[in-house]
Image (cartoon, rainbow, N blue to C red; front, top):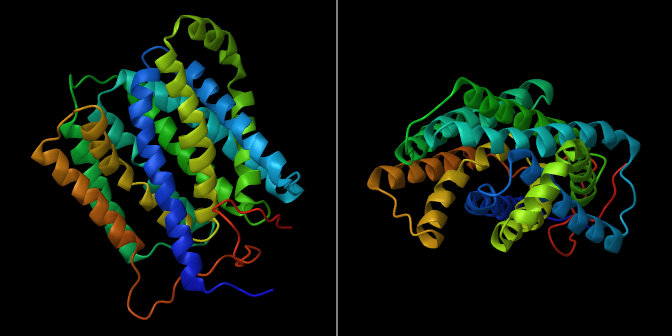
Length: 320
């Protein structure tokens, strides 16, 4: 079996990560519509059910089979924490705090990922990663504060955003070891299903609100399930299996900058110079965090992650 050049594998991982951050950024535009008609739990459940259906069809078509037993602890943990608790906490928290507070608290997540990845996964934390994340965090804070409206905040809202940041970080760190045994599609399909099961207590609310919600809000909820969840979480898993959790977490700091651009393009919200400056800081920090020093070779995939070429970004191989 011919192995793929490490540099090519790294480029494919970067491409997958790019798909993820673009789709995650687009989610903020859709949440504005759907979140006005659906409660935090109902929106999370509807999004996860839509994602599970799409992922389930892909999983059946590709005949990947069940994930190996060694992958299930990570799948269950990420499903409950990241796909379930994170989405509910974030939806709820952003209803109780202003954008600036949410940006400051939720963007602790990538920092926690780098610290937990360095400690629990023995990935280490490079100086470039630390500097890049500091620059990006400052940019995210500037974007959030510049786009704040009423400046309202509550202790409960801050705590919910903190829960979102912690569960996001814990979910990513749980995912990394599982991807040594399961493919990105296997992991995402079953973690999404676990998250949907965890959100089933909101099913009554989802049914009642869906009956009154306009079609545009429901379509936005379905979009959230298909694109920012089913596709973006799969491409995220593909990229995460081929780089460190810290670098992947730092990559998500491009999201605030993309949200500014999408809000400008699709919602007609013209950003101010301070907001644009914050977005550029986010992108600059991501560039620094993902850069390599002189003489450092491209990252190679982890043991057990296949290097051979395969069509598309969804890894169809089962690892054992």
